[in-house]
Every structure is written in C-alpha cells, then in structure tokens.
Image (cartoon, rainbow, N blue to C red; front, side, top):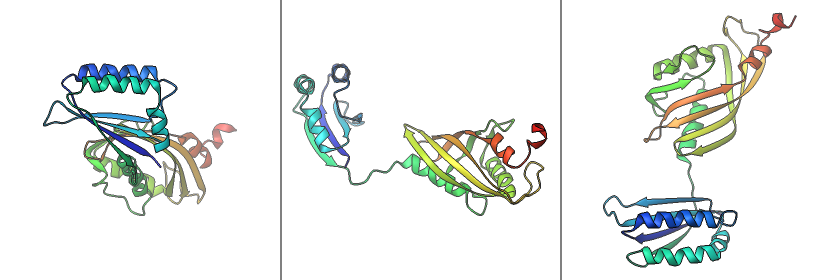
Length: 234
C-alpha cells in the first residue's frame, strides 16, 4: 500500500530550505526510497509550507528516515524553521489519476456507437495533431467530423495497453480493432477485421478537460490490411 507523509512547517528562510532539500536529494542518490515529493506554500501565509512525500510503503518510508543523510538534513531543517515541524503519516486508501481517467473516458467515447459530443471531455478549442492530416484539427465540430469519417468506415474499439501521467500530460499506448463496414478513403467496405497500434499524448487544461492531442499510429499497416498497398507490392 502506498504511504504518504505530510510535513507541516513554518519558515521565513525557504530559499535556504530549498537548497537544503537539493543537497539531500544529491546525498541520498541511489539510497532514498521516496518516489514523489511536492512542496506547497500557503497562499494566505507566505511562511507556511507543507511537504508531501510519497513512498511505496510505510516500511520504505522508515528505511528512508533511518538514512544518516536524512537525519542530518532533518536537524538542519529544524534549525531553519520558525517552530518545530509536525508530521502526519497517511496510508493511501484511494488514489485517482484524474487526467488519466479523462483520457480513458475519451477513448471509450470514441468507441461508442454514436459520434460523441465531447462536451465534458474536450475544451471548446481543442487542438489535435495527426500526421496523417494535412492540417491540424481544431475545435469540437472539427473533431466530431474527423470521428464521423472513421465511424463511417469502421465499427471499432480501443484497448488501452499502457498509460502514463505526469504533470498536465497523459500518454496512452493503445491498440485499435475495427471491422471495415463502410467506405474509407475511397475503399468500399470489405468486412475485414483489422487492427493497428498507436500512442496518443494529451495535454490537459486546468479544469481537467483535454486541451491538445498528438497522435502516432500505424496507418500504413492499416492500409496494407485493407489491400491498398497490393498494387505497390506487385
């Protein structure tokens, strides 16, 4: 179970505290067990800071605390604080990656029977980058037209193979499966079951909706499965 420690402190010497943390990161390289560290400043009190440190487990946090470098840095940190910092130990009982969840819902919407509205998923001026298109697709109406073009040619779905989220970016590695049920780029329906793999990176807006997307996928492989490359191979 993931474990999180909150360190609540007050200091008027944050710049020195920041340098101290940089030194601790350098000294404990290859030893520390913390996986994520965030420091926030109270908007209503410039001397109030809260550090949020994430560990794989409580046991790993204790290993981290017992490092001699950690003990030395802690003593120096206390000296920089206006009062004794307080610690809160938390076992994580729920962990939602909200941006990643939005990206997943986007792919689920794409695979639905109807062309989705995307109102709750994309910002109004969403910007899509697809190397297969001569021009970027910008805006909800343009996105819907692009999706309608694919849906007119295929009955398809997505399998999410992997997903990584960092900051306001979500990277999704997916596999697309489709049945060629209608005209697609001038190719009449063949009834063939086809597939391709790809990766999409989304940038998320502060409100949680998707604001921009970059696509890379095996379109050439799809064309080959539909027989569009047969003449070139002869």
